[in-house]
Length: 131
Length: 268
Image (cartoon, rainbow over all chains, first blue to last red; front, top):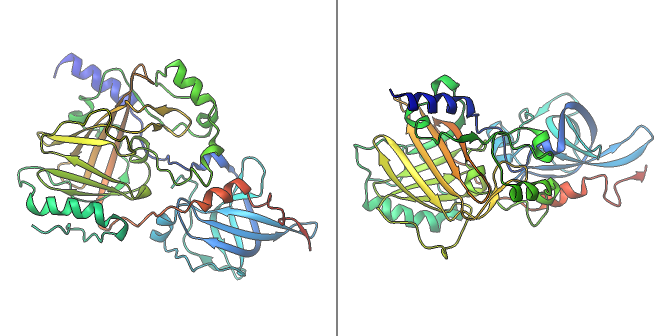
């Protein structure tokens, strides 16, 4: 094994990082994984489509006002593998969404779990990744 | 030889045209038993640094720098890690606004394979002596790698997200050389490779055939003074791709961000 080979291999080992964890629609751009948030409300729409699913939620705030929230899921191709289907949530469903808040403070959040009022979890848990 | 791979893949209708062409070639050109069998469903995996294959790392350029995912700060701060980025490319990247990507017009445009293929999505491989086909779950993209000795086409040939790929076997390593990639994001933070980028990939199975290690060597003199490199590992699993079929309305939802809709705030 030559010196050049050793140098290249050592340099490469230091330089190489995993190519994983990124994707076109980045979690990190919009969401802060250190800002957990929970919202409870009534679903007005659920789109189980790529690149990411969208759940529209009407939430009544502390002042009694109704707010429309956009709740983003991970990629439905990943969700399907964790047990989700497109008809698990329907307009009119009352749900409690736990996840991460948007960096910009807008009414946008990313899903970790979705539960019904009786505590039943819908589908599988989602992680703070870029899938 | 059957065109149906051992993992029982079902081909979605959207790819029937492209896959039919490939399937015809696969039927007539069975893979040699002497070459490694890469065929199957491959899931993104991870490998410890000490498990990386010298057969692959030794072929990477000495001046190579990792194309890293550097997290949120890199999205807006012009942090490109060890990549030596030319000034014009750096200046263009600094003007990038991630929200420009999240529009109805742009959200379903796939990135090129330089960024898209190492992402967290699986792919399928079909293999014959003269063709290898990668079906990516991410944006339903299909790559055809010609092993029949042909050259790359001329510069007028269309540039696309998958480019034009020719391959060869170097022992047990598949070497894929790709040109004609249309300019696209390189690391998700505004830095784009040019239309003249040259990608060399090497794919090699672990001795037990359960994993496939894979490197990207990105050469783009218009953008980089050094080479960008990635090392990825895939795990062979049972299963198949799930159709992606992107829905552009996602872009509208993100732009509006729910609360900004006119009727979003109403007195109860």
